[in-house]
Amino acid sequence: MSSQALSRKWRPAKFDEVVGQEHVTRTILNTVVAGRIGHAYLFCGPRGTGKTTSARLLAKAVNCLHPDPAQRPCNECSICLAVNQGRFLDLIEIDAASNTGVDDIRDLRERINFAPSEGRFKVYIIDEVHMLSTAAFNALLKTLEEPPPHAKFILATTEEHKVPITIKSRCQQFNFRLLTAQEISERLQLLVDREQLNVEPEVLSLVAQHGAGSLRDAESLLDQLIGAPGELISVRRAQMVLGTASSATVAGLANAILTADGPTGLRIIQEALNTGADARQLCRQMVSHLRDLLLLQTAGEHIRLDMPQEQQAELLIQSRRASRHTLIQATKLFSEAASTPATSWQPQLPLELAFIQSLSDKGQGTRDEGQVVSQPISQSLNQPVSQSASQPPAASSQPINQSPVPSPPSAPPIPTPKSPIQNPPSADGVTIDEIRAKWWKPLVAEAGKTNRNIKNWLNASQPLAVENGRLLILGFDLDFLRSKLEGEQDAIAEVLSRMVGTAMRIKCVMNGSYKPTAANTPATSSFRTDVEKIAQELGGTVTEG
Image 1 (cartoon, rainbow, N blue to C red):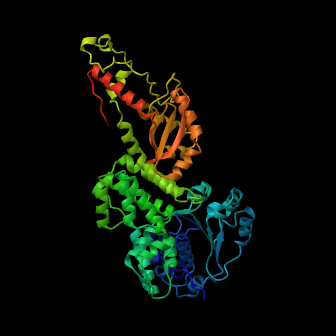
Image 2 (image 1 turned 45 degrees about the vertical axis):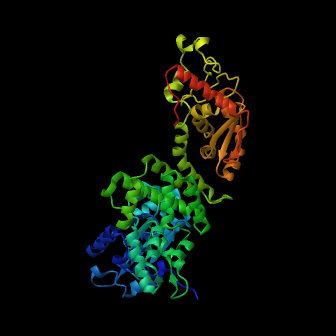
Image 3 (image 1 turned 90 degrees about the vertical axis):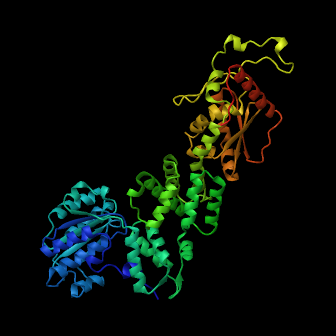
């Protein structure tokens, strides 16, 4: 036995039953009462907000037989009952997405001159009108401007900007808005009471938020959750069916971003996916959560979000611990990941990359700041040293195990943003300290120009060491990211070689598995020793970040 969808079964039968569009329904009802009904209307707004429903109510109201105009539609006369049952011949609904051609509009123009068969007016509802072709719009213009007295047009669209201005100028335009979660929850509670369903209260709030302002989407989701009569619809079951993660999961993942706790965040993602959460849906939830944090951080207690007051207070506390730059970047990353089509053989990859890259700014900053030489000392290495400081002390006062201060190694100039590719001479290669201090950020930026994924993978890695001055070792926490960058390491090595002026190679390893070679460790140690000696002669100190 087939059952009717909730959105169709309980479609509003009167204007006061339409949720959240009082600014539209009140105006239309006033025109009906005053007898000043327009010949053409344009209903614009997001999907599932009541455009087609309001159009049908207007069609009923203009043909209703009730003597009091304020009571129209009455849902009792023969006209109203015929419209409700879908057998009113003078209500013609046209799907513009399926009838886009000029021939369809010409056929409409030929039939529009026939008088109504039952009611006072023939009402034409053209849904998704923006799908009409240019020729079809042009064919509709004259009829829309001067229709027969017995004809009314109601155009509905979700993309108002695609409707030609010539069409708009001939219509009365009404803009429908997205509904709040509270308005959707109240409507869903009414449907639950009418259907006598056993639903936990938190489920309705979850479905309302999942509907994202569209009442029809929320009603369809509730329809999806209904099982056997009398069966309890729990929050756990709703999360499994809808593919959503719990609010604690979303808050925990956001907290991992704010504290730059990569292991905890990846564990939360893995647990959420293992319990049935959808990766793209989790991205959407993160975007909503991070947006709320950003708004609260900006406006504080002066803004009222669409959520319970207790929940807003908790988010306000979390927002005060966040960096605005981190919130903005993370919101952009998760929004982009949510828009990525789920056709990859690893559908969770955009989610994981968004999380990892949201950590990269803070994590990379820590590595950049923790260099061997402080900024004043590194600048002094490129300055000529005075003769008194460069001369070794007398042999009688010099300890036996101390050698004269060597000349500072020639460091390649730091690339400017306008020209990141440099070609300095380099006979002995580079050190890991030079890579971290001068070449890492330009390398990430330059290599990422051809492929944005390369930039994400590099940000997820860490420069561990340089072997023999020519081999850069990159460490990864996740093996699938290591394998991704491994396929591009030759191209990245070519960019790095042009930047440092010597042939370089790149090797990708897992963090924890790499052990420095004997050839690499002394070189770094020797460089550190040389720098310490220079700093001592100049009266400076070597600092760790």
